[in-house]
Length: 478
Image: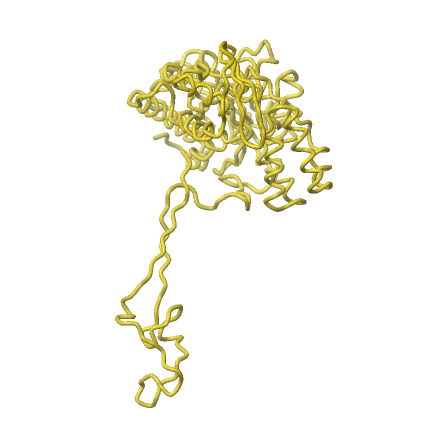
């Protein structure tokens, strides 16, 4: 446990950085502080960037060039923002790359963060990389400044929240998501035409939204092998570090590092026991598409091609050798679509044999060999020649600070498997449901007995002890 108050921990920032660099050789720990020194005072802390070598190496060697960016509020004595860069592992789980403590979320802070991230990842071919965010204006400008040639996707869930303010309702929601999920330009144009026929004003809103290359699958490059439309990677990471975000700066950084060290061990151990060529989340996708594939009829051309016919006259062409389908989903995500799976099942083969290597169990285990190292207690940290830092200047944060993101009204309130019990009470005087004896309106005679002069009420036996329960179970998504 790191000792000292929030103020004292800022004074030991340099020593902590030296210890991390010593134990995690190749890591980047950069601190920015104010150049101004008051009379007899020290510089004030401004920002800290952290990129641990094992996490950086894991991304560069084993993962797809897809990076999710987001921020979350820090709730300690000295407020601020935590900027994060998160990748997707071979099971579509999250793999952290880097994080930074900054005074506020704005273009300047994002540009500072992205410049260090660019140097760490040695991004030379910007066209090869894809970033996904919640369309923050400061981040948008920073990416255009630092990495102008990278693909930048916008979270469709965030886009839908803005859309819903003017155009609520399930039919419009379904049509917007249908547009975003379109995998070809033809399907995109068809979905847009359907929205126009249904609600022309909503159509104009979507037409004036950012270009579809930012949020529609039909326009995503295929080399990324990901058709991700939402920024769930960062949301999940932020949710797992809620407790750490309340702590002083070094305590917070250590809680994050220790949590990641333990998580890497657990995930590697779980995959070693999992008997499958790919992870459980990918298996779930395959299983769902196998069910849909039963609606499609493939016709073999005696070579590598299959013409696949389905409901409402739909038809697609599948090339097993090139591992693509005319719907573009297989090529874009690296996971066979339902049309391809129909052809694969006709060949009596396992669809998992046709997955892109980025989803393999072997790559997952190789990634999670990048373990974090141990560090000594603070009494054994090497000294630093840098001046002690004072706590940062208090900065008013934009918006309302929250630990977790604000849930939309369209999202379920309950998450995970929960059992709710609703008890229907019965009155012990009259036996009817929905009230108790204190609120019973049935009249009584002078002896305190129920008045039977009115229409008799059939009393249920043992009404006081009788309870009717109704159980409901929320759906669970792996």
